[in-house]
Amino acid sequence: MVDLVVSNYIFSNNQGDGTPNITDGFDRTFGPQYYYFNKGSPFASLADLRTDTLLYASPLCNTAFYDSIAEYYWADLATDGSVKIPRVKAGNYRLTVYAGGIFGQYTQDGIKVSAGGTTQAHARWREDNSVWSELWRFVVPDKSSEEYRHGYAEDPAHPLYPAEYRLYWPVHDFVDDFPGGLNPTVSRSDLAKDCNYIQWSGFWRIRKCIRTKLYNKNVNN
Image 1 (cartoon, rainbow, N blue to C red):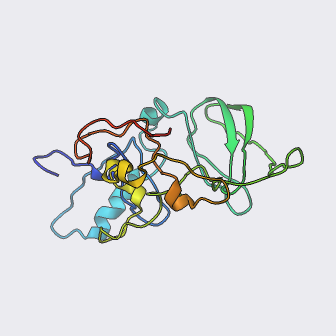
Image 2: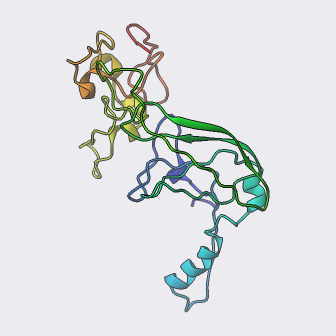
Image 3: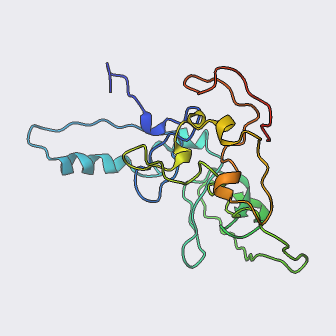
């Protein structure tokens, strides 16, 4: 906090995935977020203050505000395949299920959520390859592309070895990395070297970008 202005770096996502890995299991953080600043008596302990803040660590906190903006919800499945999502705004929804390493996804439309009630949906899905045969596989089907260059590879230049995709994207010089553009070859390419995590339409100067002029030659999107 500087001059009573909160510097929300944890939420920073300006020009890239700059958000830190707060704890194991987190990948990116997105808002809206709620800040609660409390204080106690001179004899209050940190545990006392934390207990006070837990009163607001609930999906029932500020429900009117969140209901006014939230219409998309995500959750991880439990080991038995079940999932519970509290405080879903009333309306009609599409259920989408996908899993890492499996091509395709399952969708179910027309799920109606009523205010003040509980809605149950049932789905059974498995990868269906009965109508096709896989000839080759070029990427890891997990919707991340993090196996590409400057993806989840650790950056030894920083003390906590963050994944390279968390750095400000233009710090990696696309022109030097791929002087001939992107030309991967099925079954022969090393995805960690021959494909790029960021798909540029043009590589140019934005604040601290390495290049001072727009470069759009051989930038394959």
